[in-house]
Image (cartoon, rainbow, N blue to C red; front, side):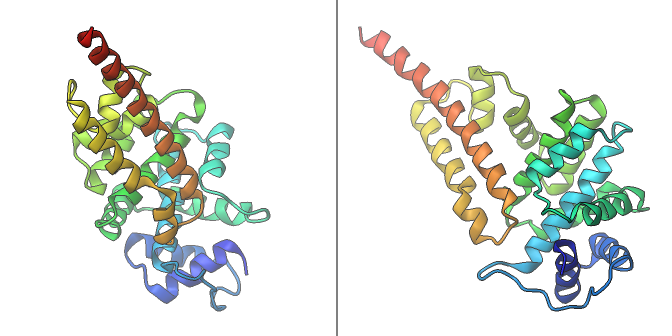
Amino acid sequence: MSFIGQIIVGAFERSVGGPLGALLERVGDHLVHRREPAHDSVGADPRQRVAFTIAAIALGAKMARADGDVSRNEVAAFHEVFEVPTGEEDHVRLVFDLARKSTHGFESYARQVGRLFANDRVVLEHMLDGLFHIALADGGLCHAEDAYLREVARHFGFDAADYARIRAHHLGEADSDSAYTILGVEPGAPLSDIRLAYHRLVRETHPDLVIAQGLPRECITLANARIARINAAYDLLARGRIRTQAAVAR
């Protein structure tokens, strides 16, 4: 059975419901053998994987409408962060096109995702990471895409400060201001606070956590990229603070 076919079956078996479930019903009408048994990996949560994958495609499709066009770069970026097995491109395109044309607005999808992963905020951040990656594929974030992502984040349950932090991961300059924002600490915070924030974020983002949650393996790529940005932010602030302390000691 196809990758998307397994997602459809998983959705029927676990009753995702809501607008995402309605989208899956529409997709199922276009696929054959949708009732074959699905085989889930050991330890994985099928409902989470189904919901995450279909929501990623649906929200990516809705974002494509934000700037009025779907570029080849955006399609390539989608494949970079939401891995599509060889031979599954047409199935993913089907889900993408149906989601883009759906009468459900992106808000309904985002609200359902926010509810499904209300206790897994890191998962929601991974989703936003992937959407940012797609939005930036054309070389920049346009106003419409920024507004779209801000609204998705709000429906996920993130406040303005959370969005600023997540946005800084992708758009922040390599300076201390952005580093403070990425780590979620106030400018001028003591090194002890910076270290605590750094270690907390690394724990929350570790790829092993992604695996334990049974999410798609492409989330590991997002987790690794996020950790790299967290490490860079911490190194920038820690080095600067150590140099300052050494200068004072002299």
